[in-house]
Image 1 (cartoon, rainbow, N blue to C red):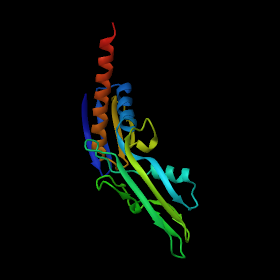
Image 2: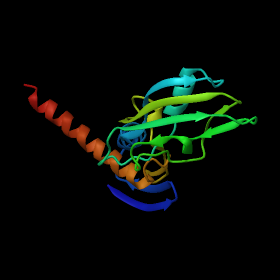
Image 3: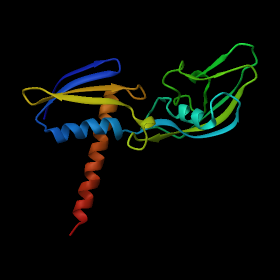
Amino acid sequence: MDISNFKKNGNIVTFTVKGINTAMANAIRRAIITNVPIAAIEKVTIDKNSSALADEILAHRLGLIPFKTDIKNFIDTNVSLDVINDSDKLKTIYTRDLKSSNPDIIPVYDNMPIVKLSKGQQIKLEATVELGKGREHVKWQGGLASYEINEENKFNFFVESFMQLDADELISAACDELIKENEQFRNFVSTIK
């Protein structure tokens, strides 16, 4: 296998791989999308919600907020939201209004709108941020990955991170997951007689 043209631009990485087949290229692509552990809100306990959003919709929106992820040092983290609109104007609640019990596990973007509150409306909730994988739910998908094959049978990869992890960290973690799964499969096959 020969890797060349590795370029990183912000949250996007491109590179070329020669010496693999389509099955291997697809395994790499799928590992990047679905196998990397990513942090996201999983459990939400809503104490008060007088907003226009139903509890289920609010919980779903919270689940799709990307959180910074440190795979090696991650611990489950609690976040809370306790806001009330006491003004006459609409008040937009943003991801920056979430309070995290762990300063390292915070939303990637602090300016994502969650909900708008009219005068007197209130939201009070607690939630748990957990690691999961994209194969379980899209909220644990760390980015996008695709490839194209050129005339020389080289695979040109394009990887875009959603910024929970840097794009190169996302690729590295996907490779680690592929190695783990290969070892598990190898161990399983060795037990068959």
